[in-house]
Amino acid sequence: MPQNQTLLTPLFLDTRVPGLEALARPGWVLNNPPLPAGDPPSRMGIVHRALADLVAASLGAGRRPVSIAGDCCTAIGVAAGLQRAGLDCRLIWFDAHGDFNTPETTPSGFLGGMPLAMLAGRGDLSMPAAVGLTPLPENRIILTDGRDLDPQEAEMLKHSEVTHLRNPADLMGYTLGEDPLWVHFDVDVVALADSPAQNYPAEGGPPAAALQPVFAALAASGRLAAVSVSTWNPELDPDRRSEKTSLDLLRNLIGNL
Image (cartoon, rainbow, N blue to C red; front, side):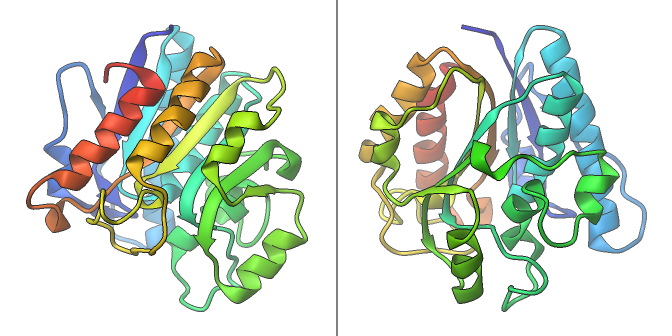
């Protein structure tokens, strides 16, 4: 099992989240570059470039990058770092939402609802371009759960080559080939009873106990090259239940943090 290198980005999009920075432990690397005034996509591009550098450096040192951040857009930086290191991974995206909106389909305009589409080369590609990212082939992307989709997003996903496995347990019998794997884990995939501190809660998710064997099976494959995590909201987590649930599940994937 490779040694993990945890990379902590204590931001939600381009805004600092003190509660995330407080998670830092000895040996973790903090990705918190100074951000000039400007529009959020430009500021986020700086964050993603710095993260891409850290991911590539971790892989170059023989370590498995584990990115923990406050939003899913940081996956763009992880993808760029993997490409710089020459890794062509199959992406498994655990999320209550599809994150497959584009500016044309989104009802809200929320950037955090678009990163999977951006990774697949759809929508506004200014943030992927800022890190030199080549779009991922859709047939190498698996969205699992994705129970809360906007209408046009659902239609676009249906006609894409992205595999949508509504039940994460279906991964247990799914043929993943021999490629290295990158798992993205948005903790809002977990049932709200186990992890309620979510900015965008969605009812009906799998309990943590149902995800544990799925994560353990992915770990046992021996092909887990990288992990990225989009976290709970620490300000909504006074009893730290969401933090504990999320980090316990992450340990099922990667072992010790």
